[in-house]
Image (cartoon, rainbow, N blue to C red; front, side, top):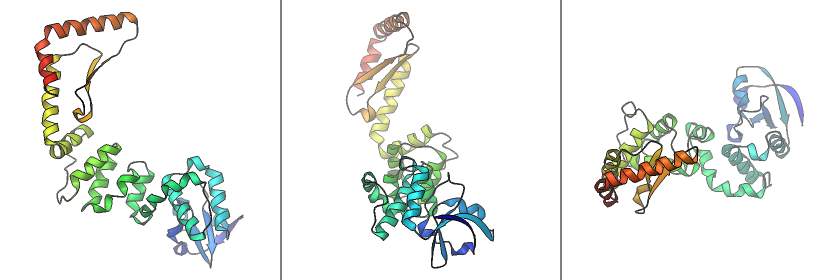
Length: 263
């Protein structure tokens, strides 16, 4: 392993071996048959140069092990893991510990377009959802939405199910925040639940719960349980809020019954 100046045409880069890494400032290059295979993306800033300073090695396994030692096994992201697993298979050597074998099911992601891989790298797209993305007629619109709104795993699955088999798109300029977007999706995917939730929230609003008291239902009304959360700093605040809840229940008992009947 050595650092040396190399003079070559950047078009000789073989992108199949790219391992995405933004933390290393010097290009790591595997050299074989006069070609240079970059292991990280730093080369992008050097693409127009005739000469660059790089870490070059003819020992691919050694170079990858060096890469891992620089960054640390616990700090390499999923795309980096997949690249190394892919190379490990081609060389028939183990370059990562056995704990990473569980990620082999995500290897097809490496064949996806760059914008999909970048969304995973940024933590905007969950890999389980990414495996489904090619089923969408307009996956670019899906990526546009998840890059605009940070969605949870379940919300991404809901968005996927909403867009699947759809030709039209969501006008995200009319859905300016995540809550509006999720309401739109759920109103179509789960019309019965959505109507039930709207009625439930209308009654809950009419209850006018005391300050620092929050009433919560189970997701999708999976059970008939309701939960009251009370925020307090001291015993007096706790007693005052419990007393306020008791008074409110006495004053609006019929409304509470109506709320409970909704679930």
